[in-house]
Image (tube, rainbow over all chains, first blue to last red; front, side, top):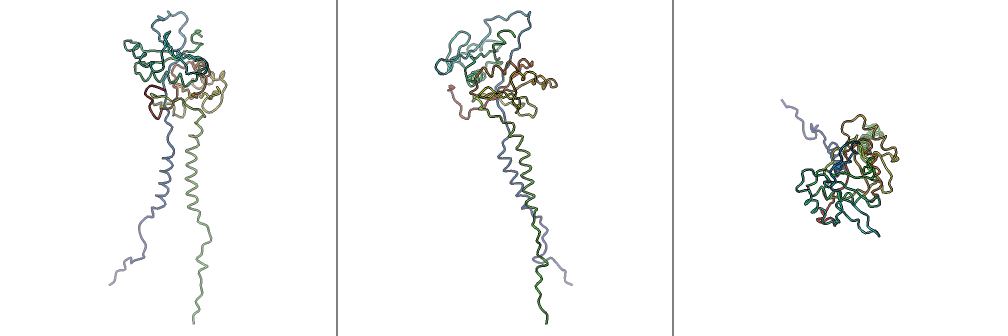
Length: 146
Length: 146
């Protein structure tokens, strides 16, 4: 008695995966092209004005880095408190100042007409030294106590 | 004598097979659904280049408060343009219901610092003291800062 078996050319039981793979490859390419937004940045603080009748802080402990506009479009100059420093020395100077300190707060103040890039770079250098914990942005209104 | 009648016409299917087209269309639909919100987030700002930025995961979240400052001093809250005077009130409204009062500033590298200071002052008036300055990481590390 002959058993009828599926001869050549009979139905195959395999699922056709080609379209599935097509779609998956397309999705893979899509997600390779879309790179997720990964924002990077620098932390900064904005000091709130002190309450009106609080004792004033000892002024000599405060470190303010000023970014001053240079005449005729040259690169802006830097000043730590009243001391002129160059861009290359800023990191070393800050390390020297804050190495021995407990409160590692510095303030950044900039002239109105300088580019934001310069201020960002000062904050960047300060973060890069690893000795400054907190960086505050000084504005004219804060200085006026508003 | 049997006449062989060709009867192939009965088997020809005149419908267009739309299944692959629908597949492609659905994939395209998904692509645009995913991509559109990502494109809208980008403001036309040229971010400052820095060496030591840190990851800011909160800035990528849907509800992050990102204040953009364009090169000409235009101020954006999210993607909508706002006037600097309205910024404080709008930020206050948005911050009223949340616990982490962190605001991100995405300022153009070439923007004048006075525009940035203005925004910082307005952000400060909304009782925010933690700022994130969004920058870009330099591809090539510059040892002594340009």
